[in-house]
Length: 154
Image (tube, rainbow, N blue to C red; front, side):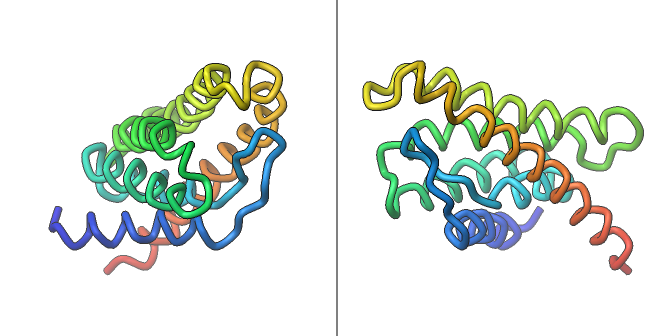
C-alpha cells in the first residue's frame, strides 16, 4: 500500500467525521467517519485502517472535542485494525471482521466513558444507543461503499 493511500484515507476519515456532527448528551457526537474506517479496512487492510481510523478520528476530535482524542485514537484505531482482517477475504470473515471492529469501537467508548469524570456510567450508557446506531451505519455504509468500489474497479 502506497503512503498516499494512507494519507488520503486518514484525511477522508477526518473530513467525514467533521462534516456532520450531531452532539450527544455525554459530550461526544454522532458522525459518519466510521463508514470510511470500515471501507479502509476492507480496501487496505489492518495496518492502514488502524492508522487512518485512529489518527483521522483523533485529529477531528482535536477540533471541538479534544478531551475525547486519546480515547478516540484507541477506539477508532482498533476498529480499523479489526475491520482490516476482512481485506481480500470472502465469506464469513468479510462480514464478521468489520462487525467485530465496530462493536469493539462501541465497547471502548462505553468503558472509556465510564472513566471520564464528566461522563461517568450514566453518560456512557446514555450514549450507547447512538454509538450502536453509528456503528451500524458505519458498518453498512462501509460495506456498501466497498462493494460499489469493487464494481467500479477496472
